[in-house]
Image 1 (cartoon, helix red, strand yellow):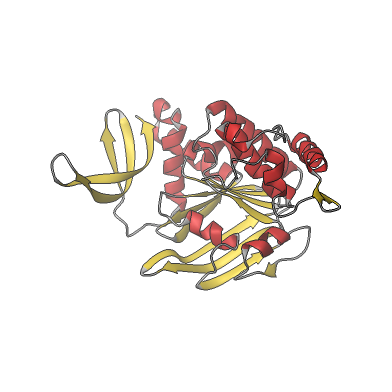
Image 2: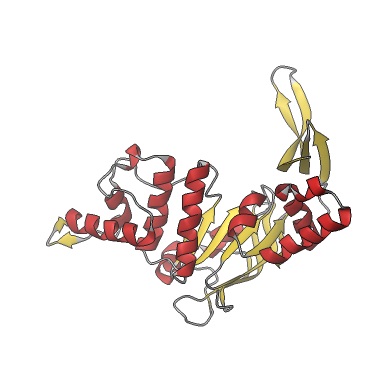
Length: 311
């Protein structure tokens, strides 16, 4: 990380009818770092990143981006094509691949390599294979996407953004459907991209991932940015808290520990959050709601749970 900002978003407002998804949200990401954007479901994380990636124009606020060592420039309201050309790309939680095409065909879609009027698939496969080996995202370019595992399909999504020259890579809940070994492989890839000068923004609500992979944390709640800190500082806050509490068992629970550390940097919220204890688990509850039960034929109170941690 060199300290210079790669992304700066200020006062971002995004509405969908009467729903305010982003309410004067801010984000600053340094070049060459892995930055975690965290918060409960519905906090506005994905919407904010879709504004950055050119999928949504903001209703208010400014977006600035710097890539390839150039200074920040105002790109507010740009579209996805302009974002990709500038080196900003997003890997979505639900993959956007054509299952009936091969890996190579998916990567070159819209940027087809041709020899005369014919598609030069051999050259495309060679380029994809070279990129795959260089980045560690190994996958056979001749395989059909429909034959890939979930982890392999995600590699193809990341390769697709890198093939188009991405320097700022946004990943939306990338581990949601991955096995633990696949998560470990993904972390290796992201660290390699960072070490090569890339910038990674990781959208997640899994606090153990925040601890393991990120260098900076931004916390969102109810569409607003409520805190920002270095991950190392959050760890140290937790460590001092564990010492004051004198609980050896408490110090061994990094998930709940990180929840406490993040709560220190987040401003108080008007939303009804609470902590419940059930079956040996601490449930941090951010929003209460009702769900219709067809068995009892009435609405039953329930809660949206943001994180769980063992007692």
